[in-house]
Image 1 (tube, rainbow, N blue to C red):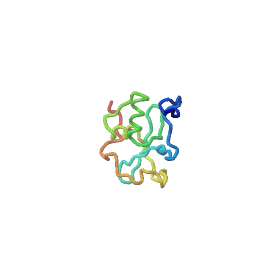
Image 2 (image 1 turned 90 degrees about the vertical axis):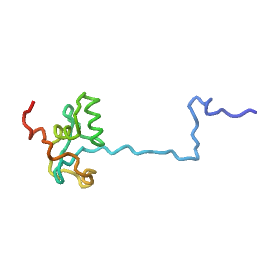
Image 3 (image 1 turned 180 degrees about the vertical axis):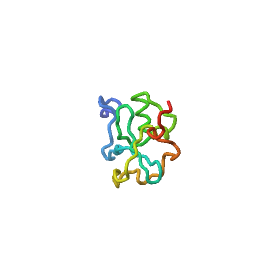
Image 4 (image 1 turned 45 degrees about the vertical axis):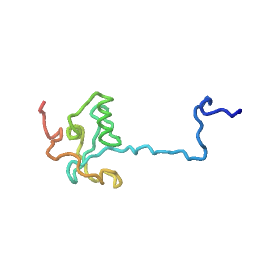
Length: 119
């Protein structure tokens, strides 16, 4: 029985069933990374090497620092303390996701500027 070319024989790979829609996923929204230090105290977090401040979340920030610059932190608190800058709440857009999230950083962890020179 002669049949048309199969998906295996196709030089362009398997054929897609045109009756099914293509699943499309939205890329994550990349925005300025803010973290809450206390209930109404916000930190703008940026890379200590290249100053990039647009990340999907804190995990993406930590991966960026480690993979791009070989900079590692012992904890998220340490990373935010060393790489965060205190900002006024009014700087954060009303629709920014951080406004819906709980406090991430322990208030007992000092910021780099507050801790002075301990090295």
